[in-house]
Image 1 (cartoon, rainbow, N blue to C red):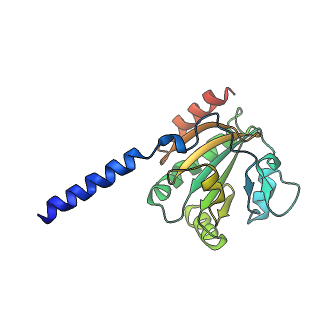
Image 2 (image 1 turned 90 degrees about the vertical axis):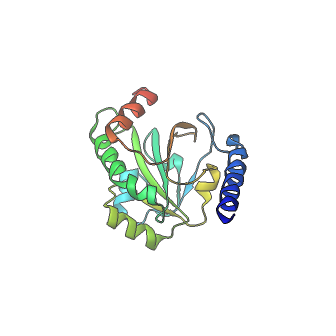
Image 3 (image 1 turned 30 degrees about the vertical axis):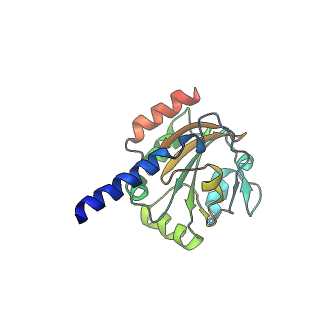
Length: 183
């Protein structure tokens, strides 16, 4: 009897979740605007992004036509599994002639503070800027279903490419990005 009740409860929850409209989240070609980010934690991060000022910055302040935004959470197991693949993708994109100047990487820690971001960056050996999104503003603007989610935005805040869930193959992802961006 108890097992049947648990199965029925699980089935009911699944049906409720499936009935939530997918249209509530962003789509390719949606405009998310000129996202505002927290100040870079490390000076090298500000230099990598080409920021001419200290403090919070916007998408348009980043010196590249495209920004790969990885929205993660330090408590997310899928984000933990994705970290080595994302690091490899960054290293390949930073050396590839078509993407090294055209694409900058930024990680946004949904619900995470600066202390958690610093620990994650060190523990996962993340080579690109990670920024706290303590109040989940970026997460909410993108209307994300969860983490991890990786998107590429242009300077106008238009979603050009997206991947929901953990990236599994850096080389295949880079090829897909180059093809999508027509670089």
